[in-house]
Length: 263
Image (cartoon, rainbow, N blue to C red; front, top):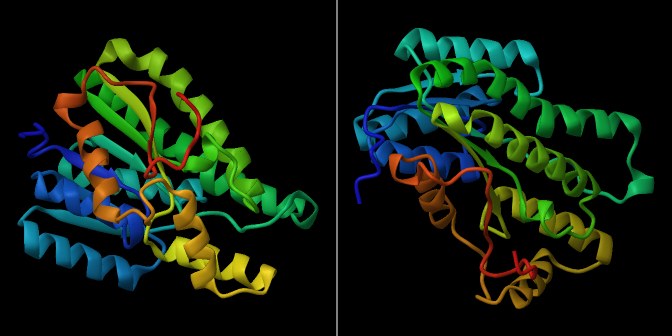
């Protein structure tokens, strides 16, 4: 299937590893030019060089912290300076600390809001005018199954991902007439470093091995396994494609059936 994004410019946030990297790889395979960003400069450089070598597309890597407005502006403007425009935005960020309500400080909440919500708002604000002017754009927010079904010990993620969902649904209706779609993609338990970290943290709290925690998660997933990053990235690539032009305001899970809600 030709997704119709060859030559488009995609900004993929937090893309030096994990789900962000998988999405960047998938978009490059479809011929999209990339702006990649992450906090770690060395890991980002390695990821950019690897994708450029394997796909042959032009890749620009800009190190920065997405919780900082100035860094977001620098990243977006560098991408526009190099390629002339940003057609596709994939927002993504590292997960906030685990914890229950009484163990989280106001500073924890402020940092999580900055990383999970304000980063989405600031990235969107930076690229949306150009998308509207050209009459075509794709905004896809990587959130979490926590936005649909709260996950134990993830108070911050459960709360703030829901705010991103409300923002995206409202924005989708505001910009639909301009040819811009806004969707959320919700990963479930996927084989990434983040999930490994969650398993270790929960295992330490319960006095069990991380492998036991992952086995419990797998038993709760109808497919009885963790997802693969490439499975997640395949849907992400479709949702930002020309083919998905009539899908907007949606929040779609990639979770092996873990979420129990009907819709």
